[in-house]
Length: 142
Image: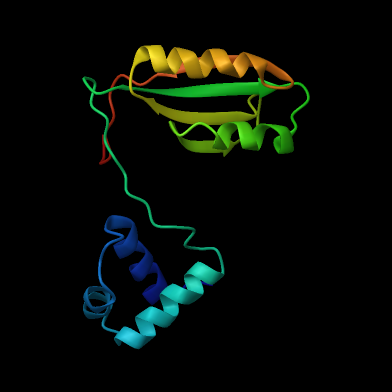
């Protein structure tokens, strides 16, 4: 279980994954070796699953949409490789309720988004896809 130091380390890494261990150790008031060990443990136990570069795609550069997919029946083993093959999928959530899968897609153009969406028609057991276009994105508070 993460203690206050782990939580602070995680918060710092979420804010800037490129922070050095030295910078983190100064901010949490722990030694570099203690921070290194804590980060290693958080990676090994699956709390930290990776380090990512996040990009912004402006309206001029592309489009962002959520695709809500429903399958009848759902077979994650069949769908996962198909999702993984689309580099424009930035997030994929298996969710509860009437939907099975929610994908965040950032495409270079509406034409590319349409191509991605059209290719999904061949996916096994796909029952329904609803596209929700993003009109604005805020990463801080609304």
